[in-house]
Length: 138
Image (tube, rainbow, N blue to C red; front, side):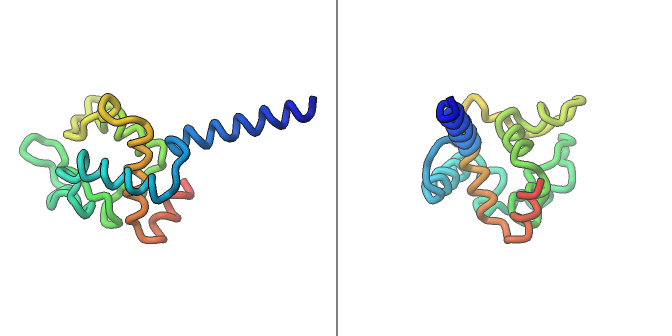
């Protein structure tokens, strides 16, 4: 009985880790996938080097903020993994609510959860240690 309970707990822990990581793969495989997804789906707005758009803190003519940087100069590292995941999956406007308008699309229909986790890991891998540690503590 005790062995069956332990096996059940081990299964649940493994399943949770699998879901949180977007699937079992090596760190280098995850980062490679994340870099590929970023280049294909994020770099056009957020910049090839995660630098964002030049005037990202000033609303454009449409009243919306341009794409922010994802490097240490931006604010991405101020948000939890869960919030970042939701923003990518559902879009900023859906997450913020209250009629907020954003050019950030929802990628839930085009990217798998694994792709989203990988692109976030890629972005985080480019942050300096202080920003990574700050964000990990959330």
